[in-house]
Length: 296
Ligand code: PAF
Image (cartoon, rainbow, N blue to C red; front, top):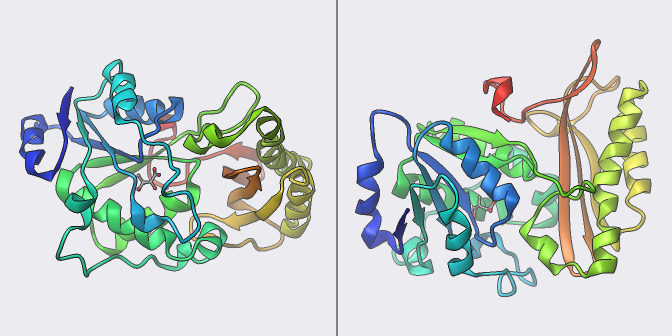
């Protein structure tokens, strides 16, 4: 595994460019099984480069940028046992050194949900992802489906800016009890860890309602919100039409994202499930259209 510790060493990736695709898995480190799943998904398509960079521009004032867990050596140890060709760990100066005046502004898909609660967050995500795409020049990039709005916002950037990268959204990896894996789960003590299950519980409640024939988005959202009552602050509990994240028509149908975000103790957590609702019933689906159904 090659470790590229700054943009000056990026030439080290050149040997990985073969006739086949080069795959990028962008991360902020603090790696867990969910990230390793992204790596394994990516490795099915070509040599994998994992980037590790805690991106300052996607954190707002009062958010956890300083506290965000950073441990490059343990991340590297974890990746050493995985099919990873290279790790790219740039510095802040590599990514944001002068001149640093141009940034990417997210479009309409970033307006609600996390975009409303964290103003500027998706502009920061898109700016750093565009830079990573420019530096690593991947053919394929793999993102976790847990960050559904992020996947959809990046998808819009790739389409609008005509970037030559194929996006893959990889299935959310969960703990045995259903909690979606997240670097921020490290903030949870035992009592908050137990309460955090209300997020996956809320999605299960919304999905069960759909499976029982409920087609009114407001009713599904009410049930999800009720199931989140164990959280300290509910940021949102919504059903949105995929892929534009627009409000659902009634009766609800087609691609539907059920998405929740809540604060539990010191952690702000998010979770979601992408569903296809049609005459055949309710089934989990991919976020990004056009990828074969077996890729999750
Ligand atoms: O999902 C993440 O870890 C980050 O938002 C990303 C995509 C690596 C950009 O900093």
